[in-house]
Amino acid sequence: MGDEPAIEFVVRDVSGAGDPDAVALGAARDLAGLPFDLVAGPLMRVVVMRVREGEHVLALSMHHIVSDGWSVGVLLREIQAAYAGRELPDLVVQYADYAAWQRSWLTGDVLEEQLAYWRHELAGAPSALDLPTDRPRPATPSHRGAQLTEALDTPTVTRLTEAAQQRGTTLFSVLQSVLAAVLSRRSGQGDVVIGVPVANRSRVETEDLIGFFVNTLPLRTRVAAGDSFEELLDQVSRTALEGLSHQDVPFDRLVQELAPDRDRSRNPIFQVMLAFQNAPTTQTAPGDLDLTYLPVGDTTAKFDLMLLAEETSGGELALVLEYSTDLFTEQTARAVLDDIQRACRAAAADPACPVGELAPVSQREDDLLRTWNRTDRSDRLDSLVARVREHASIRPGAVALTDDHGSLTYRELVGRASRVSRELLAASVVADDRVAFHGERGADAVVAFLGILGAGGAYLPLDPNAPLARKADMVTASGARLLITTAGQTEQTHAIATEAGRTAGTGTVTSEAGTPPTVLVCPTAADAPEELVPDRITHGDDLAYVLYTSGSTGRPKGAMVHHAGMNNHLLA
Image 1 (tube, rainbow, N blue to C red):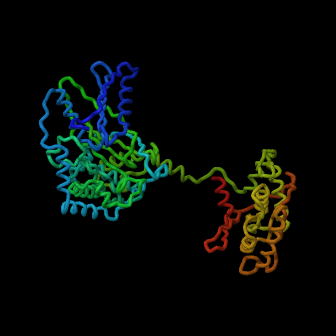
Image 2 (spheres, one colour):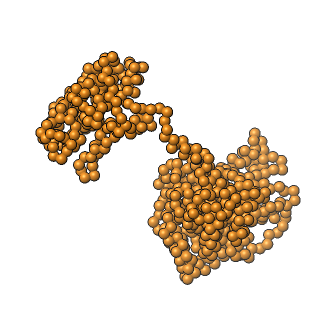
Image 3 (cartoon, rainbow, N blue to C red):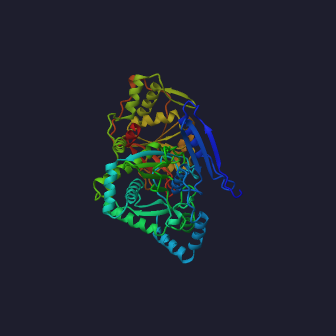
């Protein structure tokens, strides 16, 4: 690239646009969305836009590999110095000097001591924070994201700062404690790892350098609901101090050491980051120059969640929650941010309160829980047959069901079902008697089902495609005395009855060995509305139907469903 760095520098005049401010911000967003070529460069782009007389917007886009948050403050100070005509002092060291020093120092015993700390600290830590998500986690993240912004009020921030000072720690540790408590409650995990970026400028010579110094520390917190917030804060403070004393190992080296088996769907070691912006920034401008920071927002997400916090000049704490739109809706992200604010206020009001009471369920979530768990009903279903007959009396000519052979109206459906009930009652069917139906799925199956229920019996379906021995075993095991079939299945149904009769009495509920079940053909004729068989009164614990599963032993097992359960399911 030559001796001189190549930087794209573009000047535009947008003052003639209908809304020059919106055009300038849109151009800044577009600039931020452009990718960088790490091989060919450039790694920094600059656009200056004139929006009106005496007012310009400066948009800077820099790849993180050449700059960090601290570097932005350095750059702005140097721009101000240039405006004021001040000469910048020579740098004592360059970034290349720092890189060479770090590489030579962080070897041997020094590197091993730092790595040993992190191995011990993260031993047994969960590989993932399993927060409930609104969408399935993609195999490869798209890194699409969005942001929500809120401000924690000054009185709350003041009380939290005082609480931190009383425990000999910082507002950052307070916020980390709150975030750990919220994440623990939402994930149901008592062991939480949060990524924390550190400036990593421990030497005074690096304070005026522009470059990528920042490192990330995976700080682990054990959250116990019964501990007080002060106890949690003490633990977080100790962990942060120990982590800072071992901050020199680059995070990518920790990943190589601690997470060799990578899951491409998640960030390694931690999935939530907390960033507290306290890098020095410029507060004054030379002469009559007025500088205003214009946030352009971000449509990317580096992690599942990232909380950014910055103290404002008015004493508030600006909170920005960046979230992955692959995983979360705006509503869920808003609930998380609300949890954080409520937990901050609870900790400020009583630092000794139990951790489990920091972030109680919000009013909105409580209303949802009460709605979801409200099982009382104004609508009752005491008899499915009676409900169908009631509908048939209102709309007798409406189509009730359709199959491959045609349609049945409600009048025809209840009339044919009544004819089935009549024949079953003539065969002395009583409550809980199992009555099998052997036929294809279709209108006849529904007719048989309603007819069996109307006689007080329990419906037992037999799959025509199942082996004969299996169907006979189900009939025998259930104790079914009656088999209803269709005209096309008569021969097979008699074979089932014969086989069931042959095996009856061998430890089953069938009362008499050698007696095959009676076979009835589902009638095609229908009772007239005035001749419907009275609906047999059933109770909630009477059997409605029996379904046979494959059985873990290879032998089919019957699952019995009672009227109360069936009716509740149908109402739901």
